[in-house]
Image (cartoon, rainbow, N blue to C red; front, side, top):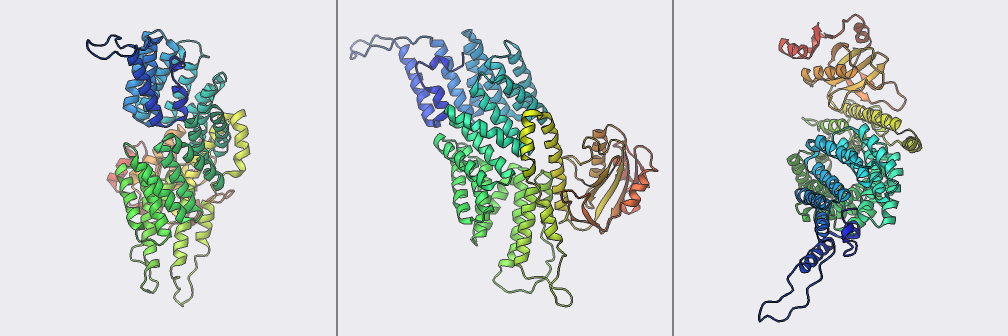
Length: 615
């Protein structure tokens, strides 16, 4: 028995939770509660009172109806994001079903309560969630609905904990067990597609989410369909298919408007406004972003993250329209992102500040001779942050915007009065950074997701690491001159992809061969961060490494590598002698160039990480 089955002869609540607005669902819950109250009310009227209508006959299965009512309220609270209430109501429903000996309904209610805790408490709830869900799955027949739902939500816990490979394995296992339960199958396809969007496997995600959206539509599940279309929009954006993305996001917005889903609607409107900006339709973008902000601000509590994103889209649209109110909207977004501690938002706010500084002289009404600003516009900080988040496509957008702004400014001149040229460096850097839409991999991904999903996970993870490295190299084209270069030797380098710096690292990789790699850092980076990056690499390799480090005072990245290139295009960087030097080093030895200037205290902090420093 499912938790809402006791209400089937009394109410269409199960259908309403999937397809009606929150207000309609709440009204139906109140109607059921009133009906239960009437059924238990005394029939006799007080003396002297007018004769009352006969009381409703007792409803069959009263305690189960009460448990189902509590579950319905909990399911609505979970849908609306009222997570404290959801946990309380769903735990209460599970206990009520248990008291009536309804084991399957009890376990399904427990699964929903675990999901509510995961959404509320995030990583801190993962371990206990996995333990409880495993207990539910193992308590009876592995083919029952509760076991499938428990496996599905176990994968949610694994994804939140950061183990994408485990989440994929669990979801695929749940998918295999879901054939008798098409409603659960559609939800699992949603989750699997969302996981592949996160991994950057957009072709596989699109194939799965199209299937999920169709299943939801056929079953009349507008909530699940809206989620599927929202993620389909994200997958299409990852593939560079802007029109497909727009169609999917418009469908999500329409469904969420019907459902009264403020979160989904604000998300869809914000994405649509960003799409309009990308397509050069600033007036449409402003209208969409304004609607997104109004929807997010009208929610209870207000959806502050989407308010910030919508305010940013409004500011950029106004800027493109020449509206002087643009700066205030962008500053509002930046302040909110800083308050929320949102890494992507803070990176985007830094991008907006750089744009505003660069545009100021371009839009000045006072003619001025082209001069080099005393303090260069800091495009690099935003670009590096975006690259480190694994978003080279965003870095490419930033590089394009910077180039467009600089091309609109008065051209700098050479000493003899002619126009200065950068030799096409900026164009090459932009073209290389824009290699992030994996169109040629789409068909292969679709094949792998069904035939060899483990291979797909490995490919997607490797590509994500490569995209992160590409984003960092593209960002370094904006850094001031000066690089710290390390030639690293270890037998495990280049094996199983163990050569690229991790998400936590501050380094970028510019070259590697089996057993050898060359990493670099901006020269302003703290020596402790360099030591920490090398220690993390040593841990990942599971063996000691040898490295020779040198300062390239004028070194810079001119252009990141194109597909098929063997390395980034560099200037004033010499690595041949460093690579040769690694052969003479002992295991665990770091050989330092005197120009690095690491004093004894700095050296001691690096030695504390388990390295031997020589000079």
